[in-house]
Image (cartoon, rainbow, N blue to C red; front, side, top):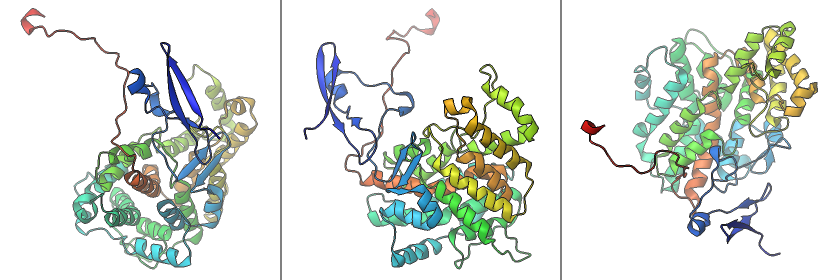
Length: 429
């Protein structure tokens, strides 16, 4: 079968562009030779029609509501696997066998402690600092504490740095939370699994024993899985762009955290919870639905629709089930936020306005309620997102470093400023 080509005609000159096919998904036109052949380049705000790299990690079909990690559906991974198994899959490309999983779990578990001097690093922040501001600073500072794993040309150092970040991120996130609420730091315990260890570091206090609830630990683990990677989103693209300059991995992940902090990205679940609280009760929903449908009203329903998914977000289905499990375990039967959420979901799935615009509930719609019920303040929601997404960022960063076609990122621009003009001395202006 002959290679497919796309022909671009500009001012009577034709340019043949190679059409490339992935394993699944739409074909792409390789526009690499376009500028050299025509002295023109493309204009694509937000890069929504541009593939910036090749990747074997995650595939999304937004129209069909599909999310695959290394070919495995997210539903199967969340139902049958655990977070560290998904971490191994994202990093190494295959699910581990029993011996590989035991070894990987051991290596992550025994890297969870952070350098003791980092505990004093936290005291440099104001007590009322936002936990995401603390995370940006602390993760960026890791290269100062672990400079023996910053040589990106050494595969062994890259993997050590990768494991360190996956292992230490829960500890740093828990420390950010403890500092935020004014409680002493809690050290990790090697006899606990990843999610249980994190919950204990967040909610244990020295004056009494803390027993991890297995239902909450499983829910936390599932939340981590659902947020582990999501293809070339804004924060992942930021990590890749920062990494393309040769920056150390800790700096790249700190850049990803900074990007994730934006309300249009990682802060969406907090915004959804705020919206549910604003609505308050089921009887007030029609009023807010009317506001949402009014083009002249600035009100927007948060937690509905997705930039990528034009169908039901597959992660939202799993998150809905998890939400019910957590609320049931905690005895929260008459939660007004959940009642509002369920009625909004029912309307969104049956109302022609929502169906036509494909405004289906997304993962942020449910995760905020779940995290609130587990005891996390809204300021911590994006921190938990960053904790989970670290493995995706690291996997994407490693893939980029090993890509022979990798080059420093340098988007172009359409300049619309002043044309060339001559400088005029200040006395003549």
